[in-house]
Image 1 (cartoon, rainbow, N blue to C red):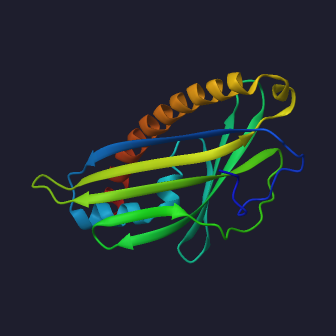
Image 2: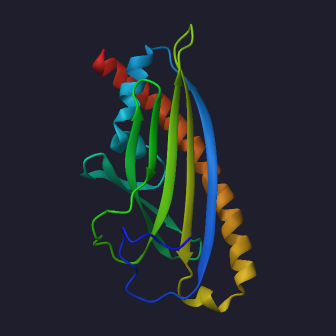
Amino acid sequence: MQPSRSANPPLATHERYIDLGGQVSHIFHFGAPLDMAYEYFLDVPAVFRLLPDALDCHVYGPERYRLIVGATDGYGHTMAAIFDLQLQLDPGRVIRIVPAHDGPRHTLSGLVFAGELCAEALFFPKPNGPMVEYTVEIEMSIPVPGALRLMPMSFLQALGERSMEFKMTHIINGFTRNITRDFYLWAAREG
């Protein structure tokens, strides 16, 4: 997977990439009406801002969003991944987020690369409140920065895969805590 055209390539040319990806799922149970849970998850920027390391999520067009996630590689290099997203709905049942490839040029500096993110929230009515099965899948090709380019690709790929596994666990655990807390605060304001 090469970085999408929705984000500018970094100023420096990077010839080597580490390809990474991962998928996580979580089931939420809410003590609230199904339509309230569905409405909550429809606010894509508010929900994605709850992802750990999310720097921003904003609207750039009709049913289009840009999510920017920041990270470090553990060696002092700061980087940002840009995910351009498109909303697809099956009202009351499914909220789907798929990659978009029409995002505006970015103005970020540093090591910036594009990734692809898919998310799906499936809503199920249950007697004690709705169940929401939420799945996030991420794929990206990260340019190998500076001095790290001197290291063997097999080592960098293995290191990247271990880091991605840790990061995906960190993302779902933080996202789960943040959603659970934020949903009830939101519901109290809305109710």
